[in-house]
Length: 313
Image (cartoon, rainbow, N blue to C red):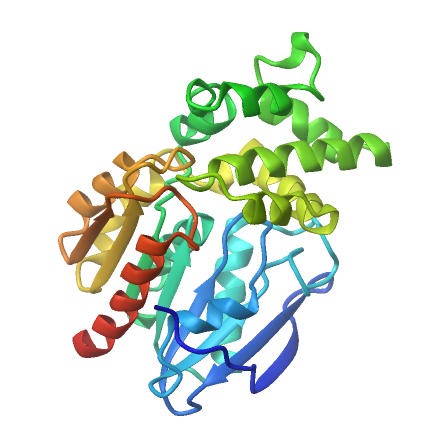
């Protein structure tokens, strides 16, 4: 399903603010259709296999780690780390790489950022390929962090609750944020791993130890937990229902929405609501998948979409 593994051909370190330096890489065809991969989280990172969703003979593939993530520096930093900062970073990257317009590919939080960017700069977007739509509304945060998904994963939920005293469990994002930004190193790492493992255990339709182990790794867990809780404590720096309210900006942009029917992190109603507001999109509901990009049906649909996008544009 995926294209063969390829190496990055060019890497860059781009200073986007006095405090933040981004890791950027390119692969594929230098004169191909530009596409930028937006990773999830916020707080995750790009991986080598992310290059493989695109035909390297036809795409100019751009991967980068967002502020505080992966190989970008400083690690897990919350300073000057907002949605608008990330939108501005995308514009800096586009201009730095001398790209006029590009395809935006993003999943989970990557879909959130892709929509926010496209609604701000529709004239710079050739097309959108989105997976696991996350609209970042209060109801979407509450579903995953305040009891919705817990009804399907009560055993994993108990592990998520463990670091938080009962009297603070009425607002788990706030309770975690306090620990993840505190001075106690042991408490901070314990909270980070519990937060991240909760996501790993619920990401796939079928249990997958490899995914859970990935989320449990301390370096990764710290950035994803700190940055996610920071964003969610601040409503992801959005106005209420901002992404759907501004979806009219997408009217001339072609796109594909890929979403697992049994996604319990970002339930399918979010993709459905977006599709209704964005008639130019094609919604692909994967009947045997959850949230993770690595699930077979989602992988297949994404590769099909990247190929179909080339025909559309």
